[in-house]
Image 1 (cartoon, rainbow, N blue to C red):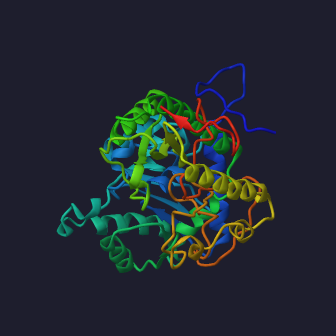
Image 2: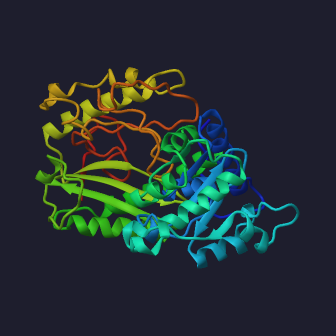
Image 3: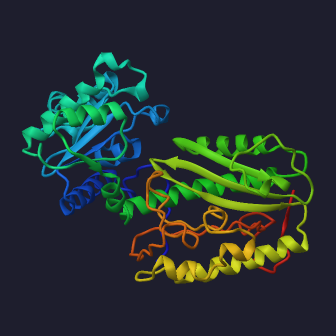
Amino acid sequence: MAIHTFGPNAVDWEQRVDLGRLRSERLARLRAQLERSELGALLSFDFPNIRYMTSTHIGTWAMDKLIRFALLPRGGEPVIWDFGSAARHHQLYNPWLDHTPGSFTPEGAAKTGARAGISTLRGAFHPQAGIAEEVARKVADELREHGLADAPLGIDVAEMPVLAALRAQGIETVDGQQVFLEARRTKTADEISLLSQACAMVDAAYTELYEFLRPGVRENECVGLVSKVLYGLGSEYVEGVNAISGERCSPHPHVYSDRLIRPGDPAFFDILHSHLGYRTCYYRTFAVGSASRAQRDAYVRCREYMDQAIALVKPGATTADIVSLWPRATEFGFPDETAAFALQYGHGGHGRRLRDHHEVSGRGAAGGRAQVLDRGRGAGHAAGEPVAPEHGGRAGRGRPGRKRWGCG
């Protein structure tokens, strides 16, 4: 059955994304993975993991600040320490953070799941302010209350002063990132719906981009157009738009410029944005005006690689099965797989923030560890050679070999 794409609004006449169910199922999966581990608790400073654990969000401006933190004790409830004003918002509007018996109250949330507190802000607070020590004290108090002070504490990312302060409290710290990644490896029905909505928004952006793309426009103008379309459709964060054209396509620089697009250019785009925290990494390559024979041949070859690989994406298949269909790095001009990384690269699981496992990669790039695909896991494919569009408008409604190649 096809994945449903619903409108973003809530309605009374149709069951759509159930955000309450989304919150509860995410937390249940994280709890289950914590129980399978040897950890006593999970401590997160990473925005995507905090959101997955607590279903809180304060905007993207603070994503790189390492100033909020959240704790999930084994057998306990999640606790978020946040900016004072943000903590008050959570207390008022996030009833799932009130862990007291009875009906929700802001006071109950303030005592249990939504508290004021800050971390070290990437070193911006002077060490003598004692912020790291205060973070460690808060965390250690919670662990002792749950009888977990002697169990390993899993942490995703943290600053060195915080780790030192936790050690001074007698807390053993270990890697906790893998617990988060395993918990969300398989998507829930609501997560899949949100990913579908996020992709539909990019579909719209690519349609506008196709109509706009022509000789004389600049890469940065394309980035602006895509961002405007996405924000207009309700995107909460346009993380980036790779806009690479002409000779800049090789080697791929992973950043747009003010280059003027010219007739016959390949123009590669990768649109990364977030819809309710569910993110896209959605590629397209266009031939501007017309496509050369070499570009057409590259398109057919890459499309064959992708179609054959996609046909293998099913429960029980492994990533090794998929990458076996692709050429080795040495076959297209690179000394090894590391040197070719991101040019021949397929990935699954990009949907849940930036921290999902990348389940498919070029040969050897993921340490040679094959992973088995399960139902509900995302798996995408990306090939690095220029390809003509298969999406939208006059340029790409056909399969390989059809003569719809140009745009502009």
